[in-house]
Image (tube, rainbow, N blue to C red):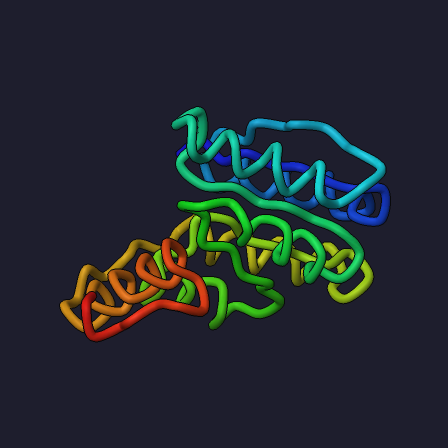
Length: 152
């Protein structure tokens, strides 16, 4: 799987671990490089996913929160801050997360490698309850605070 990877100035310490783990697991990382500001990273990774250049993305800043906040503003992106094995695979299996957000000041390279492996190896379950929830999220994405989830 092709996975777009981007890092802000604080995310650089995880760059080798993320890209190395993807390669070791047989995936093709697309290294989008580094940027000073996390919104630039989130946007670059999101654009690669939406364009189909990559199936998924990984965005890394200091906390993981900044890139997640920025990426979730892009329609069609389902980003989550992932710092543990369970959230990394469950986020894909239940929520169809397509951008993993990591914090280099929160987790180190060994945990990052585990998270990346779980995220990249997971598959969306397609269960009816999860598909319904994604429909509801799409309504929120379209209508914001005015969303009527009964219409989903």
